[in-house]
Each structure stands twice: as C-alpha cells, then as structure tokens.
Length: 243
Image 1 (cartoon, one colour):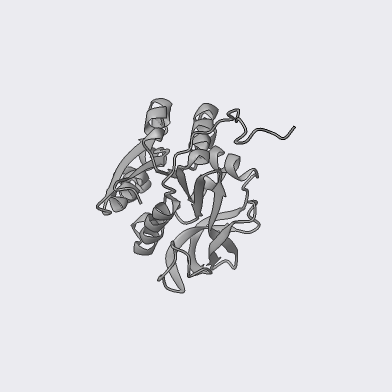
Image 2: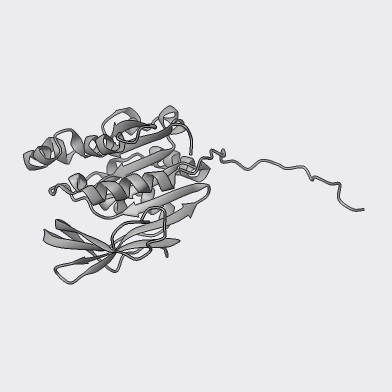
C-alpha cells in the first residue's frame, strides 16, 4: 500500500440541505460523516467533493490524485454530467478504486461499469436489516462476526440486476422477508469496485460501527496501487516476424 492512500468521498449533498431531519443526522453531510471516520486512518489523505461544485468536484486533477473514490448518490443521478461519468470510468479502468454505497447502485457510473440497469425492489420503512457475511476469508470481511444488524433501514430486495459478482461478501435479510446481495466486488480494467448496500439518508447508518468498519476495509481493498493510462498504442514486435 502507498505511504499515503488518497481518498475522495463524493456525495450529492442535496438531502442534507433540503430535509432538516437528514441534516440533523448528518450535519456535515453524508460525505462529511464518511470522511470523518475514514480520516481515523493515520496514513490516509481524505478530501470530499459534491454535485454542485464545478465539474461536480471531480476535475481531472482531483481524479488523478485519487486512489479510491467513494460514491453516494440518490435523487440526482441524472444531473451528473456524462463527461464526468466517462472521466471517472477512465480512472477506474486505469486503476482507481471505486466504493459505491446504497442508492449509488442507480448512479450513471455504476450502471456504466456494470453494463446493466442495476434495478431492484425497494421499500422505505423501518425494517431491521441483518447482514450475513457469506465470505469470511476476504480482506474486507476477515475477522468480522457471522452477521450484524442495523435496527432501521430502507429495504432493498432481489432481483438485483447486476452482473455476477466476482466475490459475494454479504447477503441481507429484512423483517419484511426479502433478501439482497448487499456486498459484492468486481474488477474493471485495472480498477476494483466494491458495492455496499446500507445507507439510507433518513437513518443514522453511517454512524454504525460495523458499517464504518466495512466501508473502511472496502476502501483499503479497492486500492490497487497502479495507474496505467488507458489507451490503444501501436506496438512493435519484440522479435522480427519469420520470413
């Protein structure tokens, strides 16, 4: 791992400014809460970016200086410029890690990388969510308990229209009876992608110790340590072809 792991936490920052109940839970924004617990890692350099900044805060320079990008989106997926989506996709292909949280499943960047609609069942209520760890040898999950619970969360249920994960880490069960693939990884080019489901804005999910642990470990895992520029160079043969 690099001496300093550079993390950018991206968030729409719309709910927090429009809904007092959300602002009460996340007074510094969801991005601020996530950045705060990631900053406990002594060798990490954390920055934040939000939708309404110029270029959504994801300039070419910012992305070039980002090893892992954490993404939270919900109500404004369509407002993310296609040019920025392509810029992020390129960096993932070059080796930048991407951690996609909760409703980020419907973000343009996640859909682009998955190549599917990423649709699912959902219900805004106060379901209890029990997350079962189904791969306890993975770097993200090693040493975690067999399961942990979130007292109140939005329900996501199968079918979840995603490609088969490279690694399935968590399956959730909700009190309504539904189940969901809540933690999964993929490789895209040189980059690693981790999707983690919990995080509806009206619940204090990102204050939950186990959720913080999983996200922190997800960022560590998503760091590839490479930056291989995307391109299509002409290559000369190493040896002359036979006559």
